[in-house]
Structure formats: C-alpha cells, structure tokens
Image 1 (tube, rainbow, N blue to C red):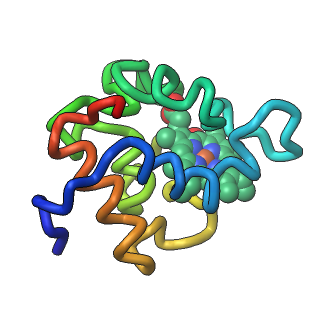
Image 2 (cartoon, rainbow, N blue to C red; image 1 turned 135 degrees about the vertical axis):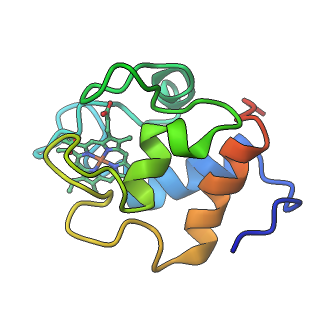
Length: 115
Ligand code: HEC
C-alpha cells in the first residue's frame, strides 16, 4: 500500500502529529493522551519508549511496525489495548488518509530515524 522509498523523515512524521494528534497529546489537553507528541519531546516519547497499555511492546520499534503501538493505533489494530482501539479515537485510524498513514508506516519501516 505504501511506497517504501518515499524518503520520509521525522520532520514529515511530526507534521502529521501536529495536524492530527497534538490537540490531545499535549500538556493540559482536555482529553490527555498520556503521551506527549509536541515536537520537543515526541521522538523520545515514541522511539523505544514502552507503551503504557502494553509495556511489553514499544510505542515505536524501529523497523517493526506490527510491534509498534503507534502503528497499531493508526492502523486500527490496537485491539484491547488502552481505551481506544485507534488513533485519532473514534476513527479508522489514519487508514482513511493514506498519505498520513504511509508517512508513519514508511518512517517506522525504514528505521525510525530522528532526522
Ligand atoms: C481526542 C483525543 C486524541 C487524539 C486526537 C489522538 N489521541 Fe492518541 N490517545 C488519546 C488517549 C485518551 C489515549 C490513552 C488511551 C488509549 O491508549 O486508548 C491515547 C493513546 C495513544 C497511544 C498509546 C500510548 C501508549 O503508550 O499505549 C498512542 C501511540 C497514540 N495515542 C497516538 C496518537 C496519534 C499518532 C494520534 C494522531 C494520529 C492520536 N493519538 C490522536 C487521545 C487522543
């Protein structure tokens, strides 16, 4: 589904997070998501950081989307983990917006680098 040679960087990922996620994943948000995704801390809160709802898996495991809670949530596959099965809550994750989904998918597959 996604073009794995798309040259995606973390800056592209952060752009998706700002547009779709930071409204809840920021300090003082009304429905606080438990993980801060503002640009100053998002990388360290995601990459090799244990998931709150299942600490056995990481929020992002570089190269392993299916082992990454971030990917499971945006792929609508986080069954039974946390209050919401998908992110943003109440949607089919980012699958309905393939460009945003593929930015995250490609970034994780290509090693989740910080650049
Ligand atoms: C309406 C508010 C809201 C929006 C928008 C939202 N989230 Fe969340 N998010 C939450 C809440 C509340 C939780 C904690 C409950 C849960 O895990 O289901 C959460 C949990 C998560 C988790 C799991 C954290 C863990 O350690 O288990 C991830 C990853 C996540 N969100 C990513 C995202 C991403 C990526 C987006 C944007 C595509 C997003 N969220 C949009 C409210 C939101």
